[in-house]
Image (spheres, rainbow, N blue to C red):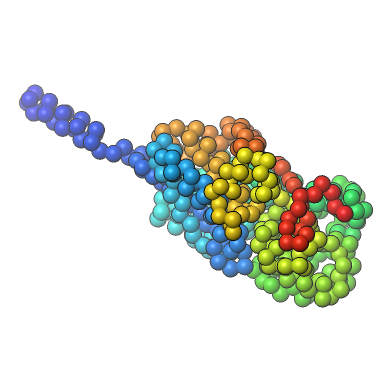
Amino acid sequence: MPPRQLLYHLAVTFALSLASPVAWSEDGVSANEIRIGMVNAQSGPASGLGSDMKTGVQAYFTRVNATGGVHGRTLSLIVKDDGYEPTRSAARTEDLINRDNVFALLGYVGTPTSRAALPIAMRAEVPYLFPFSGAEFLRTPVKKWVFNLRASYLDETETLVERLNTDLGVTKIALLMQDDSFGESVKSGVSGALSKRNLGIHAEARINRNSLDMVDAVAALKHAQPEAIVFVGTYRQLSAAIKAAQTAGIRARFVTVSFIGTEDFIAAAGPSGDGVYITQVMPSPHDTSLAIVRQYLADVPPADVGYTSLEGYINANVFVEALQAAGVEPTRSKLANALKDLNTDIAGFPVHFSAGHHQGSSAVFLTRIQAGKALPVGRMQ
């Protein structure tokens, strides 16, 4: 090529490179947008959990986008419905990764659904962030692409058993559990906490996921006459179980872990829910002494305020902080590295990860349902 033509060719190439928008090779990242995927129950008996998680995450993303996004890119949340069914969760996850080309997965809901979706994310090396589950397989062994924000079911069940045994002297503790990996995860925690106190599970009854038929399970527990029942399932199931137990004349206390979805349970159970103890992994969404709660209340409509949407809001906050730390040319590996080094305080809610510990918080708070409200308590009465 003659020198004059060569110079012209180089000048045109340089000009075009300046005029063209920067395009990163990482899926889900363009010059002005980052796509984040979410699959959870937007329909079915657990839909309140998925809807509330979406509300909290989207509320914080909206706040961030209003101020220019992250390094000039807006955050786009792509949500798909799995109805709290593992096969659907797997299929929707495949779609998000292979068709929608999302950068990361955030805010899945459930243990069985996470068990179905996680291998897909791991194979594709897509970050699987802050699922609404306390299951151990998400925590042990530590996985490069998996980060949990909430306390584990081991943490929650230890609190429940400790309070039942120490505060009330209860020793006959039964399980009414979903017959799947969620039920088994919580059962493992209950069994371990009881074993530490030289106790065992007094009785066990199982229910099908998404089923509201409690008759046979409640009948089995009535025969065992427990003093307390640890329930493992969704909010509509717990409401149905309590009403069936009351009809059957069972007087045992019902206790459950945070997955229940507190506000949805209160709405479903009505007065029958009074007296139920629930462990929480987030502070009260009404505790305005915390700056993060004040900010959350300013961004979320009153009708959507609750523990689950607050968890989604804090999840999104932690994600954004890590994304900012990943730099102006974010990659999935840079995001994972930023998360494992993250040691921060989210306006009053401390979060700490490390290379050997991908669970950001172990905080557990005990609440008791009374007159349609979840009241924080220090001990059981």
